[in-house]
Length: 140
Image 1 (cartoon, rainbow, N blue to C red):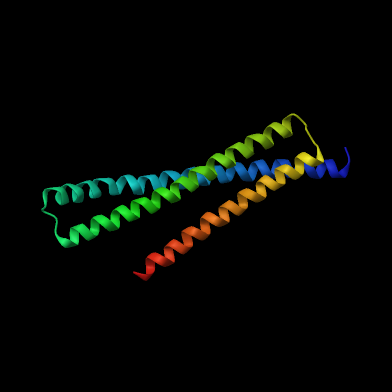
Image 2: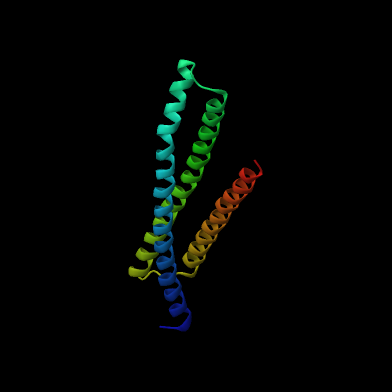
């Protein structure tokens, strides 16, 4: 086996290991954010019922708007995290199949590297949006 082929095989191994780790991280993030959303549902439900009955104070109406916006932003974040989880699992499985089927084409390596690069770009995008949202919320 030549040196270039060994490097490709090492890269495949490293890639699917990292992607499997990222899948675990994304799954954990997804469940944590989902728990936060689920935790606020009862609070929102209580405030909505007070508002429907006409018993809600201006403060409670304001809280209801805040919690609905908060829940919406968490849902958006969780959708991105779920997408990243699915992408990382698919790419991980692709690397495992390529590795065990011993498919070692240079063009395939470039395609997989490109897909990994796109995933990293998406991670940076999601993280950037999350950080921007954090600073925007801290202004209030």
